[in-house]
Length: 242
Figure (cartoon, rainbow, N blue to C red):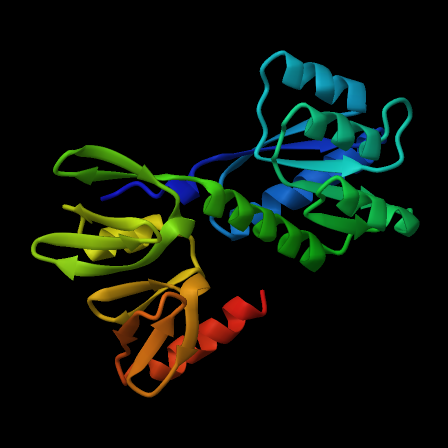
């Protein structure tokens, strides 16, 4: 079985100067991720300074959930400092101050959630961040010339080729001894789909779909199984509207 790099364990940080809120938010996150089949370690911090010190000491986090209004270093200031240091992890702001939402996006916030928290909105925010992390990661693929790293976002499509798979990228092609089903298991859910039993396509590059084929941004046309046509149309609409 091929390990799925997009199912690796998450590490999240929750920063809120109200200890009860920090614990409650952490519990909600753990329940949501467990329901989605994702594993996570969750660290709580009761001040922005404590989180900064932990990261300066080597702690690394997949996603940050920051309260905006805190004593000392507030959430916005903390996020700005982290961006200045080159940290690019998704940040979710949580606050009862709705007027701060626009400022949140100035520091690249993934989501801004209002207190009291809504479970469904927290779920959507976490899964959105997980997709952001997954898409930015690289795959390590075995080829005849060794291991190759490629970002999933660079794959236009892949097709069965001999005993392995041929992967068509934005800037070339790559052949791997993986089965196409193994490659599919390594890719982010919702971004890739089988348009034919032997062809896996990246929906980011699809520009149109007709009865028996779809067209990619570079003009490539791929066959579409008539048995999957309706499903692929639905997947494409969901993907465009995400």
